[in-house]
Length: 361
Image (cartoon, rainbow, N blue to C red):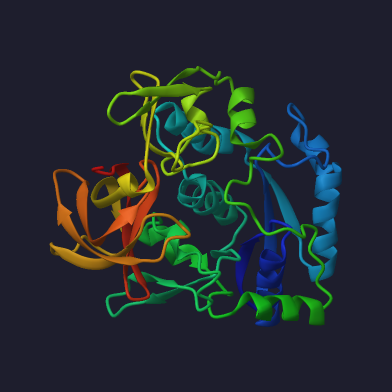
């Protein structure tokens, strides 16, 4: 029997197939289903103790996966860490006038942080997830993070802030597969996920949306002026946290050409809007840069993604003080958004990433 591998089991087809494939290869497999406290219905209510959660309808559904796979699945109470590390970050980022990306934080802090430490405690030597990414070891024993073979499902962007030690414990069986292949394997082997929907980028946002969630978290709406970049007031917004850079919907100010959000002026509670072409920028700055292997020699020529659904575009990275980097794009990019992650690629390899702090509009 090979070494014990823990699989982060969500209830979806990807993690279910991940566990199945590892078991087929002869590994001893154990599942970990972590509770965030923000599950959608299914009996997970605020204030419940862990024993009550384990008896909830949500966890009974997870037990069905355990029976399908014939592996034990541990229910791990991650509510405290999730609230402190993810929800708190989400709120603070919005209050700072930026647009958060919780998945970029959740992977290093929760899945490959809190959950990985729990996996070690129960004897696992590695932790596997259903991410569509690849890894390999270079000639010096360092872990390289590579794009998944399925270009449509590739999730390497979301793991750009992992450390070498975290990647050393990580296992991604789906990296060389396409989503269609995973579905076929699941169907052929009678694997039935408890969750039919694809994972959302923000798993703790449900019917109420961002605005409703933030309101529930104690962030009130604070109306203020909507202004063109020349200072002309054209309307009133209901709260800056309802907007993000590039957004068109919700401005509700009639004009010959649609307005787009250019900037959130937190200090003066003003929403600055303009034409779509005003969102173009050739430069931005990132901070708290993470390098997957090691800090390179500058300048660095790379392809950069400024959001998950953005095609990597050629750029030059120039160092600033501390962990800050200035990114110069070969062609101007639309809606570079403070708070989002900029991830650096060299062909299929992820070099690292940093947090966007300005967009030099």
